Amino acid sequence: MPKKILILSNHYITIYAFRRELVAKLCALGHRVYISSPHDERNSYFEELGCTMIDTPMSRRGMNPVEDLKLVRRYKKMMEELKPDIIFSYTIKPNIYGTMASNAMGLKQVCNITGTGATFLKESVLSKLVRQLYRMSIRKCYKVFFQNTGDRDYFIHYGMVKDNYDLLPGSGVNLDQHSLTELPGEEEIRFIYAGRVMAVKGIDEYLECARVIRELIPNTKFYIAGFTEDEKSKQMVEHYNAIDVVEYLGFQGDIDRWLRHCHCLILPSLGGEGVPNVLLEAAATGRPCIASDVNGSVDVVEDGVNGYLFRRGDAGSLIEKTEQFLSLSHEEKRQMGLRGHEKVAREFDRKIVMDKYLREIET
Image (cartoon, rainbow, N blue to C red; front, top):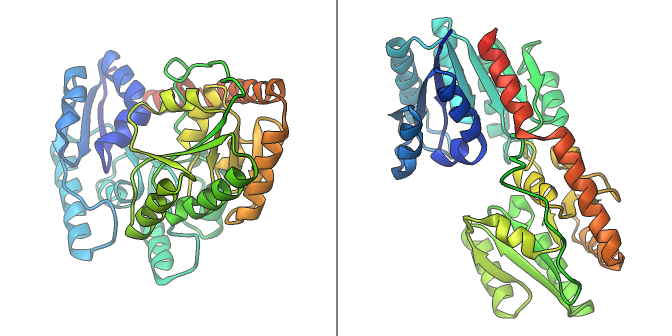
């Protein structure tokens, strides 16, 4: 029986990049799908699938009590008008403020904790406030999906959920889009960092690793793909780019092209990840990954099997693991990449995620 489904999101890209297959499937099954998100010129993609887009202004970052209360009211009004059978939400504000609205109306909402960002990396007034907001909201909602066991255990420990949770393999990876390709030749060994360029993502450690390795082994190349998020990181990257330690590519819409061009992905995040999509995409492509030992990354990378894990925030540890990778023969690097592809195909296929959502709708 067709259902009325409301999806709450903080940005077009969080739905398009990681959930468009699910949305297409829901529309194909005859469900009426409504997507609440800030206005974006690209929303026509979902409208062509048959979705109704609801323009919902919000600030993605920072907490402003007045603006956040307005968002709760927008959600309440939306839900009163639509009366959805089930609500899916992603990222912190749709999760917290969406469930405040849906709980008040007795509606079923499924939240997805896509990562905690920098909020809980250190104890602060903000971290205490956000924990309290989670207790007031998702603790009472119908279902909470976690993307890794570390986040799940943290939320349980602080009483932010009850027994209303389940695990997902991240956002999953589209194995048709991110297909297995052969590793490049060994004339030059190329590494890539892909993601937002900021301190919490470990850009400082990546730059230091590139500087040291380039001095030791000149036939290496280090790329950076992504937006710079703050002035300090921007200046650092520009400096290292100018002295030929790294090559800054800016944001790349087709990251697969660069993954195929490189031998290894490095993700030095300090934490707050769900399951990093770039690790899944790189592994699916057959690329070994070097990642910090944080929640989410440790679910994808097995040290010495399909890549290497290093101590988060420790540039020396990253350099050591990078040297280990460089010491491997071409065939050993290739086999490491194949094991990564096999792991994500087995455990992180996006179809697994879709099936879990479809079961929630059926029940």
